[in-house]
Image (cartoon, rainbow, N blue to C red; front, top):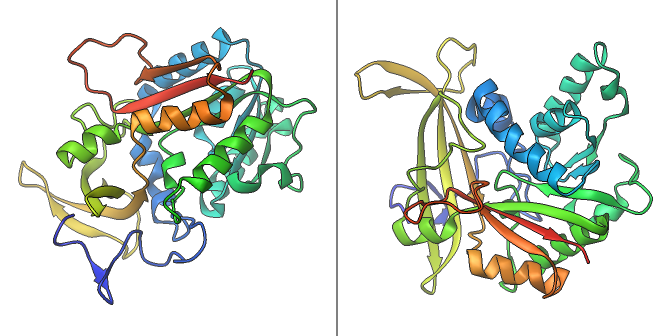
Length: 313
């Protein structure tokens, strides 16, 4: 793990300051990531490339109703709504949801599809009981999506993947028979082996041209990787941001203000995650793994993300 990682009372900080240290943390509760998320993910180029891949994948499976289980600021939900899908959206972070509510308000005046867009706080560990914020369709959803490395935010306090299994079981319950779960994670096999993101990283979901730097740290306990922490620096030149900024020098010598935030992840290895999915959906469940949405990537291709598509029997 990086030696310069800040400490408090001898304990490495695993998230930006201001976030509660107990329970299943909302790592976005300090609002730092939410404020610059649109700069991190990028604009139309990202939307168009990613939209085509995701929409085609959903249509391939005859999907109409979608639960976006990690909607964040609502960007992907909007993309799917405007592509004709019926979408309901939940997230555990009220700071991220604030931007989703704002999006709905801004767009509902010109497009009636937003009048029916239900958004609410949703806990993966108790999805059935978020009826006070959204109403689940009778019989279940055609698809549940948990995308953007979101699932890796869920920790493993007991060391037995118990919380992970519970969350995936709840996703399974939300699906109708024949429905699909689309869930992803970064290529943690590569990250743990090399201590850095793949060179292709951030070119699928996150294509912002204001990403100044992402620093990777891997925490190991008894020779086993238990957490990956990413320190993000986003260029905020020309954007009013108050005092919450740090100056950095670019390779060309120019000095820019950056916004910093830190997120920590449980490092799911590909084989282990596949086995966990099969353990819940059944060994006979139809399952495929895509490398950055590619079914058959070149032999020398290093994936940034593994996207799992698994069908409820």
